[in-house]
Image (cartoon, rainbow, N blue to C red):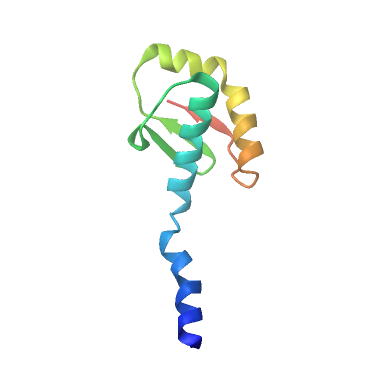
Length: 89
């Protein structure tokens, strides 16, 4: 009986994604909310407080650059401990 309870408790840890993947998904959602664009997880990388966007579309880069502060503020509200400092290409 006790093993069933432990098994149910441990099940939730099997679906936890790594922090980098979590940040990627939140960044993609935020960019979709603000700019109405859809990027894949391959287009975004998060390292040490910096978001790297690997897409070479110049109009996309301009839109992100113009809304950079708004994007960072919204991400900070969603993920308070993320420490996002910059967006780079």
